[in-house]
Image 1 (cartoon, each protein chain N blue to C red):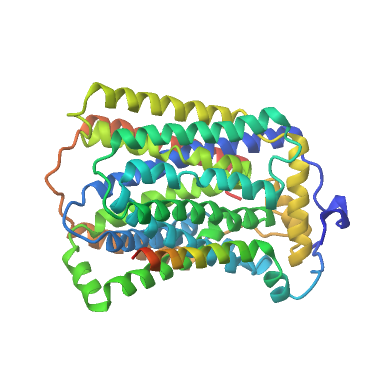
Image 2 (cartoon, each protein chain N blue to C red):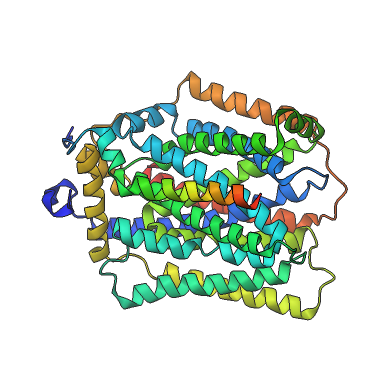
Length: 38
Length: 434
């Protein structure tokens, strides 16, 4: 299997990935909005 | 790591005929998704007793949960899900995140409809397609070097669809705005932002190679967990249970709606995989058109409305079809596909996912190192449990007295089943559901 070595540990890769932080921030914003309008 | 540092040979050039075939498949999946997602509204129209919208949403999500585990088990088997997760375990987090985003967005739409009515709310959250185009361009290299014609086709098509959706929503609006209109506008826009952003995890998973059938099985934990948490926090345990018991005769219809919705959503996932989110989201947003067809032809909605309303419906529908045609005719070129591959290579490098797996799945194939998916006793058990639960609720379900036209219902159902058969067969023959 042509496995590529990751550039760093999995957790570090996830938590430095903007693809994680953008949806996470939008989710937090959504929950706050829900709390505000309810 | 920048894409340039990854050897170009990791994902080999695609055969142009294969590329064309996958693009057509993605567009077909987008159309089929719209039809099934729109039909999912039909069973919920049978529910007319006083249940709170959040409980309705929760029951539908339970139906969705059952379908999201039983359908993948039936189609490929859970061995395929396990194999996918072993190769890209980090994607579980994104699947959960996407499920949570969906649940919060869906709850926001309930408040939006309550406060500003469907006519204003629907076009506002349907703007998710424009955000999807933006995220697709920014994060996943979609529409890069696509040329102005394709840009105009996709962006112009999405905008025309938004206008068409607005006209349809105005025509089908049934109630006026309330004193909380600002809250309603914020809720509708918020839902659009959440749903538009939900496609980031989708696209990330499919560029990495994960099968849509695998992704949705984890997505649904986020969806059900968040929806249950919201229902409990708004209603409390005892009132929620009381409402569920009170609603037991209509639970089947809501769960059935959730089940139909999952079939549409699966096709939407394949559309996002093969044509990207910038084209996949607008195509599946045609669900509004199908929902309206069910409403008008089967449930007799708008029968007492003026000619102006019917002209609005026809005009809005034509605009939506025009937008869909523009997007469908703007499929990705070979040049744009090279940029998609760069994005896929970036994911492979960052998370150490096998390059042959990413490359094969990019082309809708099984990697040479993968074993053939097979069904086990566990899969049949999942299908049996889901079917038993649905049948149990069906046995106590009541059909409410309702204005219902059988002939158009049968015609629309036949159209749905035909689309399911044709698109499912094309998916199987072209990709083996990968």
